[in-house]
Image (cartoon, rainbow, N blue to C red; front, top):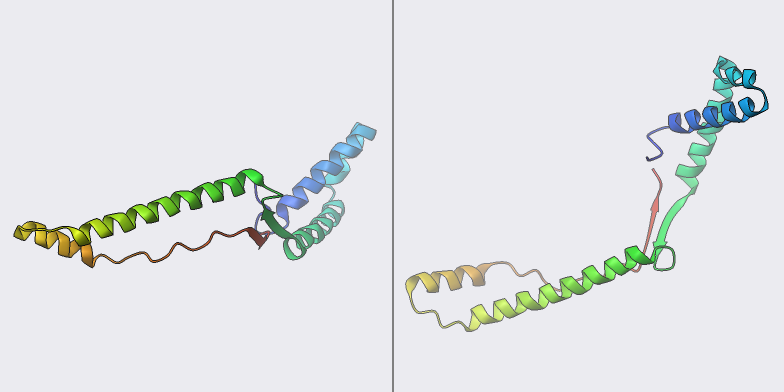
Length: 132
């Protein structure tokens, strides 16, 4: 579950947590969380926490924080490198193909006319983003 588009989820969590704490003290106290003024105060606290989390928190990832993800990035990059080598080999084979029939000559021309993907970019080594 994400944070949601506003502080409503945080408000519900604040109210539920406070209700549970109060009911551990005295079961009759939990109903106080249903009072409009109390809900308004919990909402204000939740809004502050929501703003702190969404405006002042960075989500970061590197191989130190998330080794399995970055191993996957590395494996994917190696696979893409292999795919790029394969594509170059296919392009070279088509280029050197001595096509003779009209159909084969057309196929060779069509394959040669396909756009080439260019060089494989380096993968990222870290990510940074905002929570939303």
